[in-house]
Image 1 (cartoon, one colour):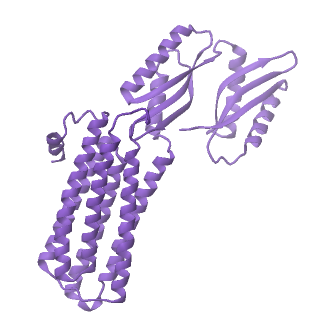
Image 2 (spheres, rainbow, N blue to C red):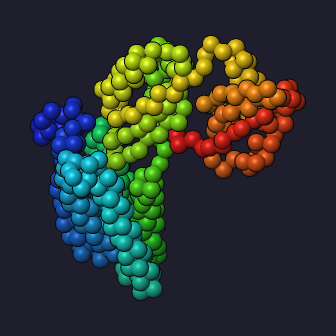
Image 3 (cartoon, helix red, strand yellow):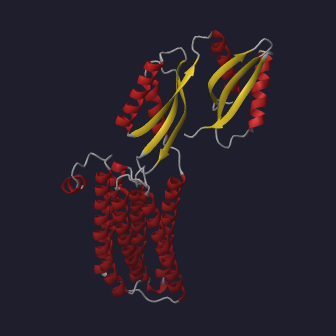
Amino acid sequence: MTDLIVKLFIKDKDNINDPKVRGQYGILSGVAGIVMNVILCLAKFFVGTVTNSIAITADAVNNLSDAGSSAVTVFGFKMSSRPADEDHPFGHGRIEYITAMIVSFIVLFMGFELAMQSVDKIRNPEDVSFNLTGAIIIGVSILGKLWLALFNRSLGRKINSPAMSAVVADSLSDIAATSVTLVSLILSNFYPQLHIDGWLGIIVAGFVLKAGFEIFKETLGALIGEPPTKETVEEIQKKVLSYEHVAGIHDLMLHNYGPDRFFGSIHVEMPSDFDIMLGHDIIDNIEQDIYKDLGIQMTIHYDPIETNNERVTELKAVCVEIIRSIDEKLTLHDFRIVEGPTHTNVIFDLVVPHRYSKGRDELIAEISGKLREKYDYCFAVINVEHSFV
């Protein structure tokens, strides 16, 4: 059914890298959410009034807030699909993250309001009357929310959207909350003296607050700057290393300016005695192919290395063995040597994981000491850095 709806309302539906097409997906998601939540809100207000249930009435208000969240989603996708301009040369894709952040604030606010109302209901309990029609309407609303969650999950996966992921999380919390409300209504028919409506409202509020916090946390991470996925990094590395004459890679960086809008850079190692024009041509091809296949605009730095110097090869192998004996997570690059009449400087960059247990000076001292044990005329000149992926 989702595929049919997408086919009816989105032209060129498979061209998801086009910001306009991506915006159409977001608008479709938002409109579906508005329609569904308004219908559910009206139905639950009716049931809540008839049964005198604060949990059901609060759930109706939650649906109204969800409709507002969907409206924010529509606006956010309309804005994020705008093309790049002089003030925003990388486009407006990060507005989608801001949209998800606003949704999280709405969800958190409604969860807090629901908790306050539930506490008041616990202090001043009222009888809740069971109504079969109301129970059926609530059951149908659960199915409606389930469809909406699956619909948005399908769209969100297709375009990798954090805003839609936020809507899905919100819908799932609503399903849990409404299920608790249904249980409250049914139990009130058999145990009217329990007055559990307020307590179950607290549980519903907990679900809502948890969903809001998770949406906020995920979106905040994207806005601050998160590393790319392991799969993306491995795909880039595999592709670059597949080209002839590429001896190694390092210093990969990826910057996210919105979902699936990546700009990056990488250092590509090639023989220092290589034809520079041919090397430049290879780099151009790599950049173009990565953009065509992965949609990433990559800038590549040509890093010349000695591949035919036996002395360099020997000392590099020894240094690699030394750092691996310390920790398999350590790597090196930009290896070179400067030989003099009395000693040889062995120069390289050492890549260390973030929050590593050993400090910079301790690592340098340990590596330098082990190198001097093998070659007493070698002095290590090490630049310690962290990876960005």
